[in-house]
Length: 555
Image (cartoon, rainbow, N blue to C red; front, side, top):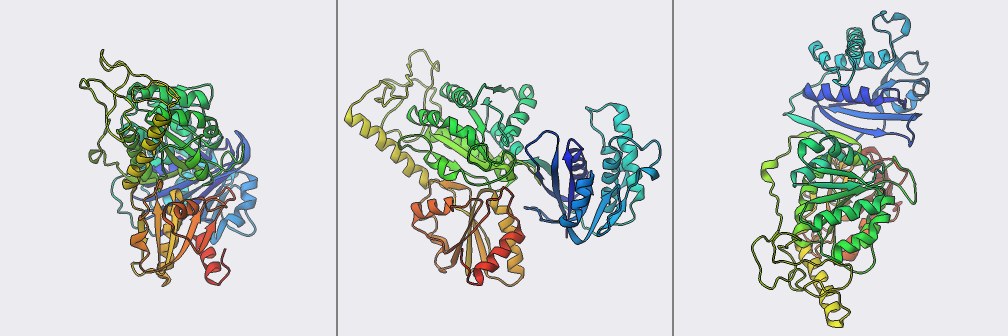
């Protein structure tokens, strides 16, 4: 069983605070949580809302409409009938003609409850009572950064709302111990688990949360976080740190990544390990800064001039973002290549209750050579993977780094044979990387007749759609790719023996991953489900599009 709560209003009216308390306390009470922020590109005003899905079982995607709608202003109140399910409940300071309303009028609030945040906190109290949270848990409605009188006022309002609630939901709550993390935080934590020492970036939504989290924990984690003057400086600083043996990373969104591409090539030709997180948003240019899309893939796969080895990874879930980021550093060091982690605003701004990270299963593979090496060739043409030295590691070793074609010692050269040998080395690296490509995640019926293909964050909504379709008797399954480039030529072979009808599902208009899949494996899809309005996929959207395809209106 699950219920969806929508908290709506203008920026600055407390949406994030209401969401935070509801999520934190319901998670502590044993519920599974999945939430997503839908917000405009402005600091104050506008119409924003957070969607919080509360369930007895793990949740992977939002719903389009809510069971409970908290209206923090008049505009939200008027839109409640559109965003609520037929039997939904509106919590508001005003009555609504078309929706069942839980009325919190200012006139009936006790004097000690009235205040700027009284309605919002009273709504939190009502929701907690509705989900069967014990009253003692209301003590968690505090924030150490707030003044004591503010905390006391909020607690009083929440208690009043709690006592006013008479409806309750019938839920079972037996979830194991979990943590609440959003996608940007998961990337940051994954980097820290890999031994991140240096992070340099210029703030760009929706990637800024990575830097915000790292800088907040900079001293505790003994790392350096540098806010640079622009994205070019951000990636150059990361390359500089990495070339000196430090695990370094930068982050940005599509527009910032566009500025980074020359340095991406510099990292490649200088064989410097580099991890870049590109948190996608709709483009081109400024596009929709606070919305979501999966339209940077083709750009990232071919970014910078020339041909060289690179790795592109796309986490499927918040939990996967942690492990994928950790793996990105090991791959970057092993093959001495740039690794791009492609997330998006959906994943970045989604908060999920997930199992505690299994850090004991992880290992940091640095591939640094510390012992003396006679006649050391930093850029040996035959060294496809493995160890490297860095400047200052010992007194005898000289390391030369340049953006030109170079010989095995790093000396600049225009020799034809050297040029071919260096390019061949890059291509051999690509072949070696292909052998390490993770198989896609399979989920669904073993006797599938329809096979959905997806990559990255689309997995959540598609998984829930596949589960619903199977419940309705459909023979369907999905393949979700987190290693998106390069791919092994045979990676699809285990899934084609049943000759399924293949539907490609992507958050872009041009089926970018579908094109890469065809280029790398020769596999073609028969239909596609696409979404590129800046909003995330939902299970309902996918199921409706699937019905259109089944009725012969192939897209």
